[in-house]
Amino acid sequence: MAVGSAVGPDTDLGFLVSAAGFEWSLMIAVTMGFGEPFGRLAALAARAVREMTGLETVVLDGTHFAASGLPHPHHLKLRIFDHVDDDAVLYFDSDIVCLKPWDPTRFARPDALVVVTDIPHGGTIRACQDWNIPIREFFNAGFMILNRRCHRDWLRETERLIKANPNVSAFQSTDQTALNVTRCCFGLKLELIDRRYNWLAFGRGSLCYQVPVFMAHTLVQENKAANIDFFEGRYQPPFNWHIEIDEAEMARLKNERLRSKGGPWEKPLRLNSD
Image (tube, rainbow, N blue to C red):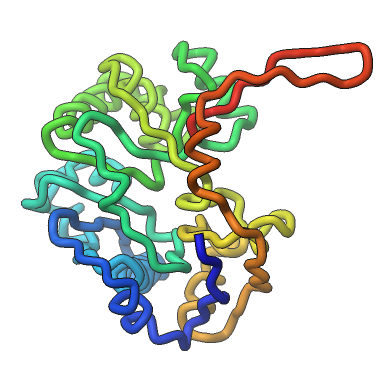
């Protein structure tokens, strides 16, 4: 993969997309934003995704939520296919910043949910234990590549689960644990891609600034306003994208089982699909 220079708020994004020669017409991108500052955050995030991917973008806002009759704005995510006609959807949270041009359609799968695993922590681990979810399969619901045939019924079943079991969201956001629970119940196949497409806890440590990241999940943790400052030119992360990724080698090592040796001991090592 060619490593580009950091993209700032003044970059000619349209030129980058057209220069890449991509053509996308079968997928739409969707995010959500209600009130301030989240409505503005969603509009800016959607613009960046549109310019970096070439996808048409839709922002579900307070008008959609008011008409839905749902108890919580986050639940609107579960009715995505009621609001778009497209069969393939890239869903992304409004606090995700698209930093580099990329082609979401190359990841689309007719038989799998395309996601990035969540960072294991106390809440995630408890949810996995309580609901018998493999920890390696617990995904972050802020980024999903969906298709209507495979996932519309799953989203609706998740809505029903939340209504019947309000405590299902006790450990995570109002939808994330429920989505993971019903994914396991439905037996939906996962396609895990690497964290460059949903880099959680972006800004913690230097690696996120050294690896070319496509989708950063909040540029400054606990300060979503930093995303707006970035879009409007008041903040520039210390990008130093110099680590080159060998995509073919990454694909070859997916799901491989190795053995790690150190001194007198030896133990198995399993690489995840992401």
